[in-house]
Image (tube, rainbow, N blue to C red; front, side, top):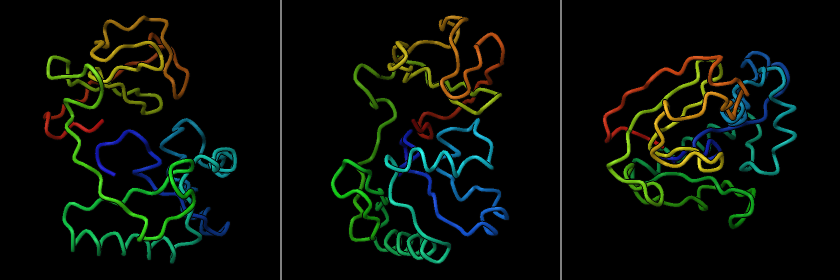
Length: 185
């Protein structure tokens, strides 16, 4: 799904046998890799076991994964605005990933992603050079008490990265500039 910060909706995990998993550098656990970037690749299967109850159903093998991807591409060629949204546990029928369960997501306007967020807020993103976590000034981090529109410079120096735990003072954030029409939350 475009324009979503939920990696469960825009990444895919698949089960592979141990040989293919090794050759694939354990990146068959791609959703987990993006959700918890600091976890070493050889521990992603353990992470998957710990959080699989909260992930979309996992395809078993390359053939099943490719069948799903080909079906989504076929549907997108017939319906240009179609976006596949994997069902999440607790939202309808958990574990169903058949093409019949797909839905069309409404377009997302980057300036209206949340309450009180409008064009007055900055559109700058800051990426942690340690783990890849991205802080969007426009969105803030409400779960951590950082309101939408809070500039990076206004965040306390004792703040820690929610993904890797590194303090703000111990690493550098790199500004990422996007045209407003290309900004994805």
